[in-house]
Every structure is written in structure tokens, then in C-alpha cells.
Length: 320
Image 1 (tube, one colour):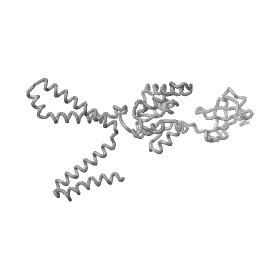
Image 2: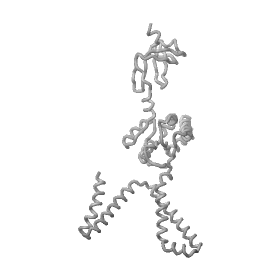
Image 3: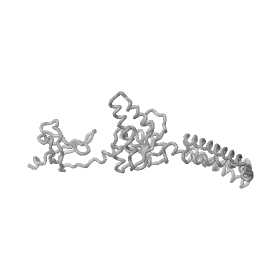
Image 4: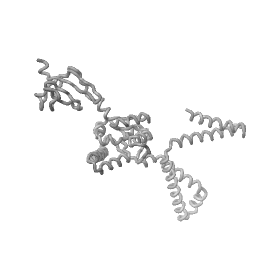
């Protein structure tokens, strides 16, 4: 809000100063107002620019000037009087046009040169935890994630570091992450883009969040620490673990189901079974059904900090 006060001050203050100290005619005041408007627009325009985009624009301007020199040399070698006279008359104007057009086109294409076509919520920046986890591929295949998956090169570098580690666990994590990137690139339901943008911060997680903020994108992760950082940076997070929790099947007391009893429980005659989402079901009197499917009836559900635990009884025995 204070920035808008300064902008309005520039728009109104410059014409006022011109009217008081210089000229009191309407033409001068209008010209001063136009100058103030140009200053405000330039300030707003430059604030939205990234340093890399400015550098690309300068490079584009140099390319435009080089193209002008080539045209100048070709026209000189052709030595056609009408063309040479017209070129010499407006030589400076042609040079300016070449430089301005090249700079403008470079600015328009600057994001693509950096590896990303547009900013916005269609971009999903993925962190290292989501790539190692791998469920992002399944989510993309089903169409729940659309747009473009943005993979930072500093994340790929970290995965490569893991893959070349002597620690077997780190090596497996790194190779899995690189394999998931290859699988994402093969998907037809979503596009993948790499970016070399990097922000100097204390952690890899914060770098990912800052990149998402810069691109006005969302972060795909399974890391709860990313959620905390993203809240502070006002960045939207798509946590695959939260999605998994939300999609767990609803089980109510009294409901019947058929489960495969896998092993014995801690207490006497207990059996342990699992739902499709991995939720553990303690089956009373289920020890005799280990290795078999049994009809059970849910009688209690316990919610713990690590998840849900369901208690059930063998249906035939409950009916008896």
C-alpha cells in the first residue's frame, strides 16, 4: 500500500511542481503527467523483471545489432544506388529497430530460454522426497496432476550425489529418484520441464519453496517440513501423503469385510490383517485363519498419532 502512495505522488507531484516552478500552461502540465506515468510504468515493469531476463534482453539486443551490421555489409556489397541511399538516410533508425525488436523477442522468450514456458499454478515444482517416494508417477498417470512438472537441476544434482554414494541406502534412494524422473518424462498425460534456477538458502527444501514462489507455482512433496516452510512463504503445497490419507476407505463399526489374515498378533489367538491402504486390522480369534481369507466384523476403530488401527472379530464366531 505505501508503494502505491509513492506512485500516485509521482503522477500528481511532477505536474504540480512543473506548474508551480516552471510553466503554467496546460501543455507543460500534460507532458509532466505523461513523464510521471512513464516513470511509474517503468518502475512497475522493472520490479517484475528477473535479472536473468534482463541479461537475456541485453544479449538479444546485441544479436539484433549484429544482424544490423550484417545487413549493412550486404547492402554495401550489393552497391545498388536506390537501396544504398534509402539505407543511408535511415541507417540509425534501422539500427534502433533491429536492437529493439531483438530485445523484445528475447524478453518474450526469456522464460522458455530458462526452461519454463509460463508462470502459474499449472506448474508443479517437485522436491527430492516426492521423486524418491515415486507415487507422483501414479498420481500423474491417473490425471490428478495436470500441467507441467518442474524438476530443479539442483534436485537432480542431489539425486546423482546419492546415486554415487558408498552408502547402500543413499545409492538406492538416488537411483530410484533418477528412475522416477525418467518415468515422468515418458508420460503422455503431463509434461516435464527442467530449470537451472537456484536460490541461495540454508536447505534444499527452502530452495524448492523459493523456486515455486518465484514461478507462482505449487510444490509437490511428501515432506512435512516443506509444508511449514511453504506456509511462511505463502506457497501452495500438494502433499501426496495428505492425499493418500484423505483417500483412505471409510470403515465403520459393525461393517463386514473379507480380509486375508497374514500373521499372528501380540495377544493370544489374535491375527493381523491389512486393508488395501496398509491400515492394520487386529482380528480377534483370527490365529486359526492365518494364511486364509476370513469374513470379519469391525467392532472398534482406534485413531493414533501414527494412523488408524481397526479391531475386528471373526464373523461366524460373533454370530454364534
